[in-house]
Image 1 (cartoon, rainbow, N blue to C red):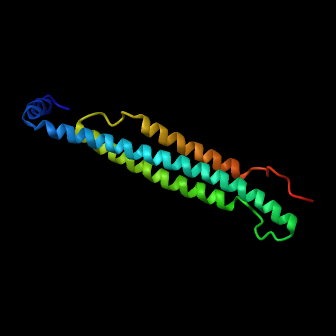
Image 2 (image 1 turned 60 degrees about the vertical axis):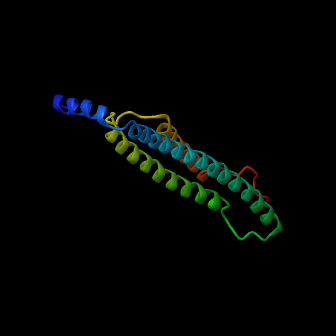
Image 3 (image 1 turned 90 degrees about the horizontal axis):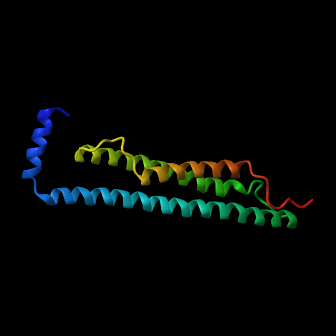
Amino acid sequence: MSADEQETRRHAEHDVDPRVDLALERTVLALERTQLAWIRTALGLLATAVAMDKGLEIIRHARIAAGVALVRHAHVVGLAVIAVTLLLFAGATADYHRHGARLAKILGTPTQETNWALWQSLFLILLGTVIFVLLLFDQPLIPPPQ
């Protein structure tokens, strides 16, 4: 930022209504609150997907023992839920990053500044991917009846 731009900004800050700054702060906090809600939702969906995967595996083995199994792979539902969760969450994280960069530009702060919500989002995407791969190549908890 040049010296003229800094001087103009300094004079403009004195002329601006302080409610504008408060509105921008509320917008930043709302953006973080929304992303943290996505994190909470994604964690719930990941836990649900793992529970569904393992629960359906037990049901499948019981049906194999009874001779009425219709599905060869019980992982399909759990893996599908995890895949959809990861896609939705990756989109939400990209949207969060885009809005954060736009707000940083408005506030005049560096866009390289990262915050905890973005790091948590990226960690959760990595965790979900690891869970997906582990379930994809998982050995059954209960060996199939012979």
